[in-house]
Image (tube, rainbow, N blue to C red):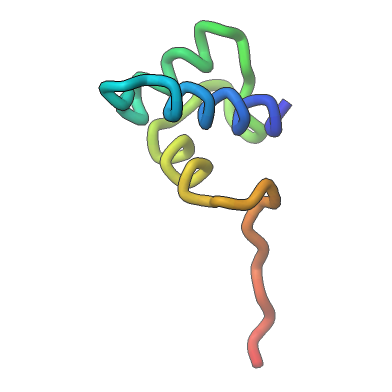
Length: 65
């Protein structure tokens, strides 16, 4: 489900000429029934972080060196 949300958010960002805000993208995901991984609702900051990650892999914590 998380991958579907990520793909849909990217699609919304890329196809909209006026560039939807993160809040608007979150609202569309909620209206379409796409659930976030850890919450009951999409938060605009979650959408921002998700779209900032250019890979399809989630960010990982790195150990200290």
